[in-house]
Length: 496
Image 1 (cartoon, rainbow, N blue to C red):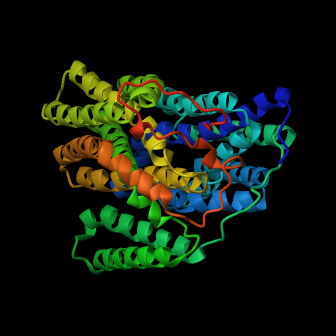
Image 2 (image 1 turned 90 degrees about the vertical axis):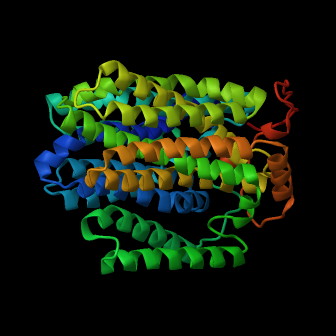
Image 3 (image 1 turned 180 degrees about the vertical axis):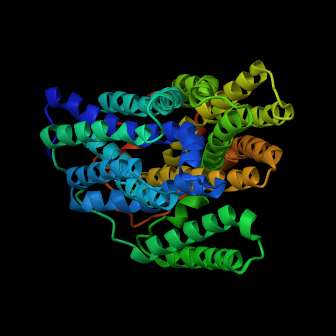
């Protein structure tokens, strides 16, 4: 595999950072623009939910496929295609005449976005082959997500106030074109020596499962849970889930490796990812509507109110990563669960008043930012820790997919509560997600959980992922097996 010379690695890192900036900034900026979009397009609450969920559903469905296709067909080629689709989709979104067209163009965006994040990680690990350099590069790359969380609400507010909601999509066009130009000049082509077989049946079943389930949750408040379309969707989702599990268990190289779920830490990390991102997606959706529609704040005012949450989402991840490395994942998971739970409970208290004090709102958003800021590091590290190289890449992909599934379900469920006027129920759902994270953090980070991870890692799989060339390079020593508070010594040649 060609590795860029040292002087050309910085531009490669810049390209990967621009790609994650595109994907992550789009989410935080867009949430602040929702009320303006609703007014301009005469959209319903469910239309706003689909604007967000159409993106996350397509992204969740195609992440694993995009990574495998890039390994097989060339990472630079797929990465360039992703940039083209995302940039073109953004331009089309800015021109959308109706909510239906906006949803369709968001799906084009998502198809491109699915080719950016996993492929960028593979490009990084192929470019930065020395463990220390790779760890530093991945840290910078991951920090861009926090930066977008911090800048997104305020930037979105400024754009909506000064230019209009369509400008939040214009923002992606110059960033995408700059990333595309840098990719052509600086990023070398690379492929994995061996690749996983395509799994079109599993891919189709996953799309049917996520699509029908989300449709039922979003549309049920308006049509009724017993309406024939809703009942048909729920039955279809259940059948798709049963068929997916049965089919994947029989495949030598499944789309989602069922054997990994024998590890309690991995299963806990997957469930935690779903819960945390469900809370985040629902929290942003409900609060942007609440601040602007209920309290009458401007888009910029709403962004400034959410700033404490965004800043802590930027500041806490590095601290969380250090704690995971030295003491294991339990402490960050407990802090995350406690912060999200407390923010949900405070939101219930704050929204009982027609004019809640700003200090109570700021405290609510601060606690949520604290909780969410601590959750990502233990999810990522626990998902891949202790896994053999052949399984770590798939484990990382499943964790990434779980985040998107969680976001979709959070927007669907909490948005459904908002659309029916049951706003307190939305905050209680968020608090419930935090409480579940507390329980999972306790149960899946002890000695019993570590033993299940070791047994799962010993089970042979047919996954041919190469750690040096793909996301399996994220493999870490198992923090669960280290003594609490103990000092970890890196062995020679150990991968970060």
